[in-house]
Length: 130
Image (tube, rainbow, N blue to C red; front, side, top):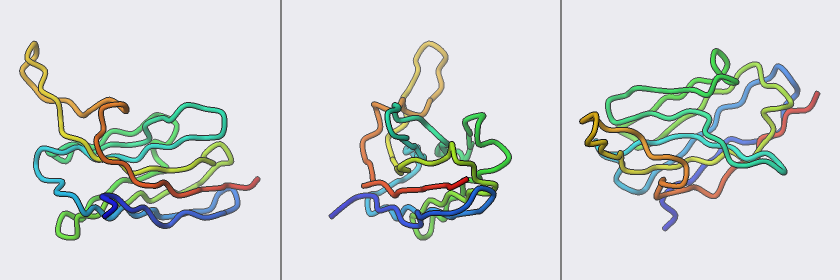
């Protein structure tokens, strides 16, 4: 059973919108961070937005004001609403989940770095034409 399954990708014109969904079959309880990541051709995978167990959401600067992450805990589903899409948003979008990490020096938790996320979806293609 695939732990995370994304859907909602497609091709849109610049300025258009898409909504991605990520259905989680793993237990993403109060100790897990979840997030959306993307990888464009020839580029490294980058974080787009993450949500921690306390509901704090962080966005990469390039999508602030255009993308919105939300989570339906009852359905264990993560969403990414993408508005005002640009050609540079073209990429494969991945959903991921991973346990938060304890930082003893500052005595607080942090979300995992990209390489530390445990569960990944298969990815969904988003193409924005100019």
